[in-house]
Length: 49
Image 1 (cartoon, rainbow, N blue to C red):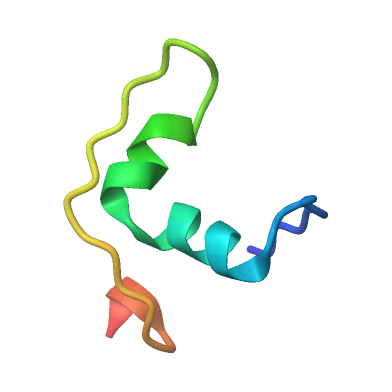
Image 2: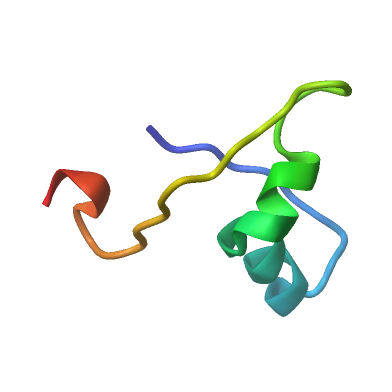
């Protein structure tokens, strides 16, 4: 799956928001949605390897 979006923010800030569980849990999903991040794997192939 590929998701694209243009954001008006520095690349470094977007990367941090998407790769740090403490940030991702605050913005991923609709208002009121709760997230719990157990694992993030950014290697090629991701969780399946």
